Length: 376
Image 1 (cartoon, helix red, strand yellow):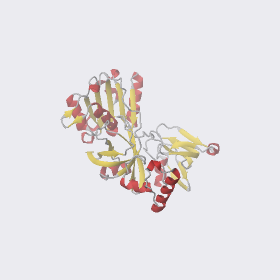
Image 2 (tube, helix red, strand yellow):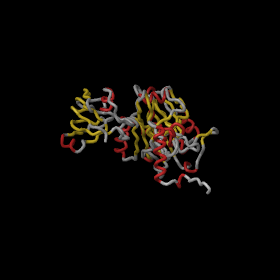
Image 3 (cartoon, one colour):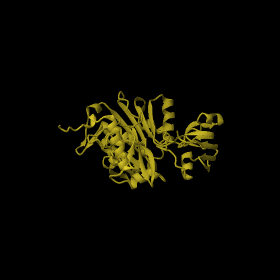
Image 4 (cartoon, helix red, strand yellow):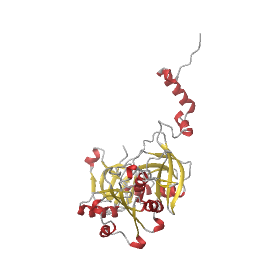
C-alpha cells in the first residue's frame, strides 16, 4: 500500500482543528500567529502594520517618515490621511497624519510630521524614530481630495497644513532626479499656492514648492509671519486677483480656516477645507471629571482626554483633533463643552440608562461635573 500525503486544503476540518489546537498548546502562552508576527509582521491576514524605512529631516522640527505598509494596504487617494499607532514609553499612542505623495511604484507611503510643544508622539517620530521600527496602521481615510473637473485651483496652507497639498501636487507633477515630470492629466491645470509659515526656515517643503514654481507647474505665493504679518483675508484678492475663478483647497489651523470660510461664504466661492488640529475657541466652566474609580478636577479649557491621562487613566484616543472618533466614550452624567464651537452636551440618569451620550474626549472640556463610562 502506497502512503499518500494530504494537501493542507484536503485535511479534514476536524483534524485541521486538532492540529491547530496542538500547535497552540505547544506554544502557550503564545499562539502560532504570535511567532508569525515575529518573522512576517507585514503578511496578509494579520493586523495592518508598517515598517519605518527612513526618517528624513525637513526642518529643525519636522521630518518625513517613509513607511513600508503591510500586504493588506488598500492604497490611497492624494490628500487623504492615515492613523498610525506607535509605542511610546510603553503606551500605544495613535495619531492621524496626511500622506505626502501619490501612489508610488515602490509601494512605500510617507507622512511628514511637525513636532509640536509637549507633543509626545510628534516629538518621538521627528527626533527618536528609527528605520526598522514597526508601527500599527489603519487604512487611508478622508475626503480632502481633488475635484477632477476643476482646472483652476488655489491651495492655501499654513504650517504643516501643507502636507496633504504636497501629496496632491507630487501626484500631479512628480519630481525625479532629472526634474519635474509633466503628465498628460496635469497639462490643463492652473495652480496657485499661497503657503503661510512663521518664518522661512520653518516653511515645510519650501524647496519642493520652489522647484515646482521654477518649472512653471504652480505659482507660489510664500507668506512669512515675521516678514509679512499674519495673513489677512482682505489681502487675498491682491495676492490672487482671479480668486473668484478658482476652486480653493485650504488646510491649516482652525483660525485660518474659520476666516477663509467666512470670506468665501460672503463671496459665494467654492472652498474645501481640512483641519489638521482642533481650533479651540471657547472654554467651559470646569468641574470634576470621574472616570472609573478616579475623580479629578478639570478646568474648562483642557480636553477631558488630557485631564484623564494626566491623572494616570489609560484612555482610548486617536488623532486628538476631532476627526477619527477613536476617543469616543459615553457621557453618563453631567455636562461638557465642545472647545471648537462652545456647544454644550449634557447627560442625565435617563440618558445613562440607555448607555450614555457618546462624546469625543479630545475636543470636549468639563462644563461642570461630568462622569464618563467605559468604551463599548
